[in-house]
Length: 200
Image 1 (cartoon, rainbow, N blue to C red):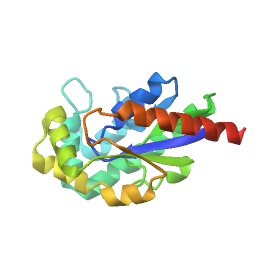
Image 2: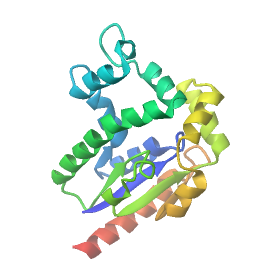
Image 3: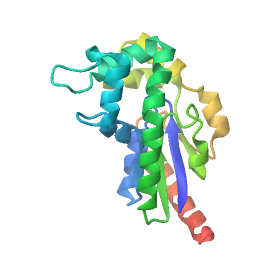
């Protein structure tokens, strides 16, 4: 089965593209969704985060205070590395387990930090969703109600746009909101189907 790594900077439209692939009945494994499940109440990863970062990373109901944790890791790089050392091995283990259970011509593995975590070996091809930085900032400001400074900090912690584009096997331009997006995905869908046929 062909494994396509879907990645891109914050606000580039990875979730939208992943949904279009899912609507074409292609399995999508989302690293962010897996990470969210791993830190739910009662899960070992949450207990480890509590141990490493303290009680104040939890809400009164015992769930993870995502906002507080995000503010901490983007203000202190060492704390970010500590969190990643907890979550990343668990996320990739979950992806490997899920892959073993899939039967499809190809699948999408959505990993926002595919390059940053050095996990490109997990996939056969890399699909990058791209848009200008100013578009990223505007979208995230509207979606997440974050300050421009916070968004810029997140962008600065990710690999550069130029680096992602240079490493891409395939590229989707998502500069315009949803315009032509489905058509671009459909073309890649047909391409990936043809690759998977060749591999059989």
